[in-house]
Amino acid sequence: MVNSYSIPSQAEIAEFIERNTGLHYAEDKFDELERGLTIVSKELGFDSYYSFLLSIDLNSPSRDLINNITKQLTIGETYFFREPASFNALANVVLPELVEKKGEDKRLRIWSAACCTGEEVYSIAITVLNFFGSAANDWRIEILASDVNPAFIAAAQKGEYSAWSFRNTTSPSEHEKWMTRFKDIIRIKGVLKKYIRFETINLKTDDFPSIMNGTNNLDIIFCRNVFIYFNDELRAKIIRNFYNCLNEDGSLFLGLTELPYQSDPRLRQRVFKNGIFFTKGTERRKDTPKKPLVREVKKPAAPAPQPPRLRIEPAPGHTERKTESQYSLISELYNNGDYSGVIENFRALGSKPLLEKSDAGYRHVRLLYINALVNSGSPDAAARECERIIEVDKLDHISYFVYSKILFEQGYSEKAFEMLQKSLFINPEFIASYFLMYVVNKKLNRMSEAEKYRTLTKKMLDGKSPDSPVEGLDGMSVMDIYFILDVK
Image (cartoon, rainbow, N blue to C red):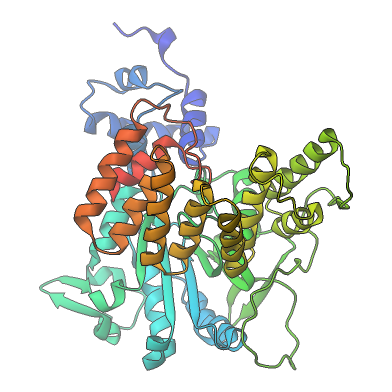
């Protein structure tokens, strides 16, 4: 007989689901939640829904359980070129403006967040490549497609669809150069897939912007028809994070039903033939000359919704207590996503070469400063800072590791590999270097080496608390790393 007093309440289950997946269920949706979890319980072989509830560890759930729940509770029904006004705005406004602004900086970075089974991201890729035509060969086009549901990511990577997925287009044949047909199956060609990288990213729990998952220095973000799952607080947090992910003049596309959720004043609303999107930065003047994109730190057009920034004036002879307060301020600014504030206040500290080896607080905020440079669109300045630190201290394994992350994100995989080798030589116990070695070797198509470092990373993680953060990986937890190693 089931002890009813041990069964979590519906409210407790709903809170558990939201905490681990971000999916929000109000009280009037509890019946819908129960139906979904009942299916999960049957798939996992439980005799009843209640025996399934009794088995759940609300504090430390397994990765497999969260994956199974996410797979069942998220909706996978979508189609190519859904809400076509967004793609019209992308082709006719956003891309032409970016080309003009970037000049000789021919790099385009796009994120399809919550890409579902791939229809959206392939629609984005088709729009982009049709816009550029043969000039696409002159550009470095990088498209990240992510979803919380690993089953959706697997389907998207496979890239096989029925004609029903093209119900919003005149005919699938109008995009035939990107696809092939086999009986009733329409398959995406490799020539389109090569521009897209798929990742499992949880908008509730994962960090972004982050070099580690490629969500920094973005030009365009699509996040449509996913906010229906979230509460208001999480929606606002995600919008703030999207803002920090975007380069100046970058654009955010939301679904039509989600437009009311965008209230960040730093993102200005724009309209093109019924297509509504949001752009980071002030309105451009018509007489703005064409010129190459200059990578520099820019203050946002409107003040960020956070406490007023304090300015630390450099002065000799600061007390230890004063210095600690400076470090705390820089950490707070970084956590709030105020990267220009981090840069300004770190530089106000002045050069402290004598502290670089001995002062752990200074080393920590220096790392935040480097990350802030990257997230503000100045990876070259961040790389130079790493080189300067390495010149001072050739045994600083963290600097080699951070430098390797920057190089990898910039596309210099071989050089990143060299820096990681040095980091591991200095500190063979640094888990993050093993994990990035796995990622870099996989990128270089050295699959045997990638598998070796995958195994070594899992061995290093063995016995550690699933929720504990892994140093150097932008807040990613042990569970996050296991998840990536298991699903890739």
